[in-house]
Length: 322
Image (cartoon, rainbow, N blue to C red; front, side, top):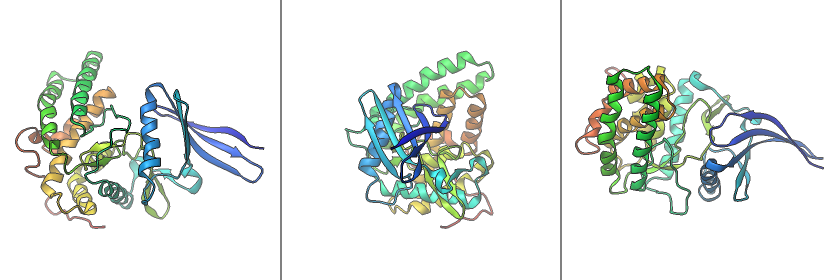
C-alpha cells in the first residue's frame, strides 16, 4: 500500500510546489512536486522538455527527474528532494568558494549549449527575463516592460521624475540594439533565466558546486545574463562584478567569444534587472539597478556597435582561476 502526504509547501509564482512524503511497504521517500495550471502551463512544459529532451546524456546540475504527467489542463512534475541529501539555499550568505563554484556550474551549462537555440516545438517564454531569440521575442518583451512601467509608475510615488525618465531613455534604444546584437544568431546560448541564490541554487557541505532547480525559464540569451541576474540579489558582491565576470569568461572557455563581447553582453544584460524591478514593482530594486547601470557604464552599450568596449578590473584586483 502506498500513501502520499504533503509535508511542506513553498512559495512559487507560476505553480504550486510541495514536498511530498511517499510511504510504501518498503521505504519512505520525499520528493518535490510542482503542479502548474493556467498561465503556468507553458513554463511547466518547458521544464519537462528540459528534463526529457536536453538533460539526458550530460552531467547537468539539475535535481534528478522522477517523472511528469500532463493532462492538458495541468502539468505535474516530480523531482528529487535535494533537502533529503543535505542541500540547502544559502541566500546572501554565499561564500567565496560557493559563489565561484556556482559561476563554474552555470558557465558549464552555457558552454554545453553554445550557439544552440530552442527548436520551434519548445513552449515560448514570455517573461521578464530577456530572451534573445527569436527576434520577435525582444519586441514582445519591450512592449511588456512599457505596459508594466505604466502600472508601476502610476502606483508609486517613491521615484523621482529623473529616475523614471531613465527607463524611457533605455527602452528607446534597448530594443533595436538587442535586435542588432542577435541578428547573426551567433554567440548565444541557453540561459537558465532565473539563476539566483535566494531560492534556486542549492549547496551541500564540502562541495562548492551547487545543484540548480527551476528550469522553467530556460531560453536562448546572452551568456552572462545569468551572472548579471544573480548579482542583483547580492549587493555586497556588486563591487566584484568585473572580477567575477572575468572568472566566468575563463570558465566558459569558448575561444571565439571575446572578452570584449562578453563584457558588453554582461553590461547590456543588467538592463534586464531594471526591467525585472518594474515587473516586481520594487522601488528598492529599481534604484539598485540604476546604481549598477551607472557603475558598469551600461548605458554606453545602447549606442555604437554591439560588442565594442569592455569594463576593466579594479586596480590591484586579480582574476581567480578555477
